[in-house]
Image (tube, rainbow, N blue to C red; front, side, top):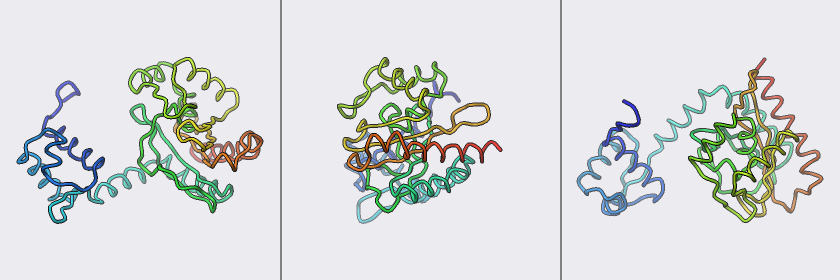
Length: 251
């Protein structure tokens, strides 16, 4: 069955899961109102999800269960890219003292596969599994640079180019100019484009066929990262980490 003939029951269940993810613990009435579904239908979906361990009930409120974490963790563990990159991301965090990240592209969004915190790493709003816009992060731009141009155009059409901060890229022309800069340097920069006051540097990881698999990065407060750092030792360390991952994957 293709996307033109979706299963309505499945769509309603998934909408319910996403509503719980967004709202957190809540009751049947609140979910019914938010989804414009009848209370009995909401209750039936919740009962099925609860039976299989995907939803928990406490008093009269429902919330997502950790079964989803098991599913996501199993998916991530099965990915060769994650298995090979994990030790290098940890090493990058330890050596820089900052936050190191691993990201892949899926359905036009960036998905954080891993975060590793060094001793001085800041707490951010990112977490494993978070989906983010590709054009607002160094990680995303590192990936977009090495995707086929027609794929980049598809992502722009599908996801748009919303500005998340005043520094964000907001037009197709700005994006392709930024990607050309990444291609020349070999690494991408995010200077307050997703979160003001945060600077990030990322490098792509490619396979032997030159297809981009994902990207690895370091994020730190702008107060701790000068331009000299950004284009000096920090970029060298991130590029080195990406290179190690590439070598281990390809050879």
